[in-house]
Length: 99
Image (cartoon, rainbow, N blue to C red; front, side, top):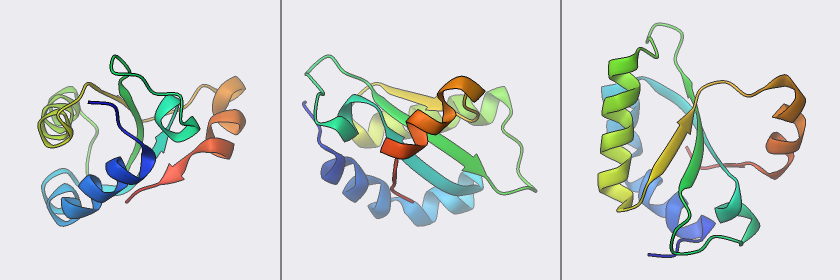
């Protein structure tokens, strides 16, 4: 399915309480081709996830979160927790906070 930013935002907002309680999500930002309106059927959904300080972004947490979001969005999800310093400003300029 070809997604747009509004569709992704609606699905994440619908699951926001569970994301916060189960995974300790503080904020989620959508960026990349979906935000720019350039997504195709083969595009993944790029998300920057910021966790509450008391939660850890362990491998298992990230894996479970990726599986949860992939199922809810019915699309491949690419989750990042940190941005490369050289790309951070560019990504955050286009990023859309969805949770």
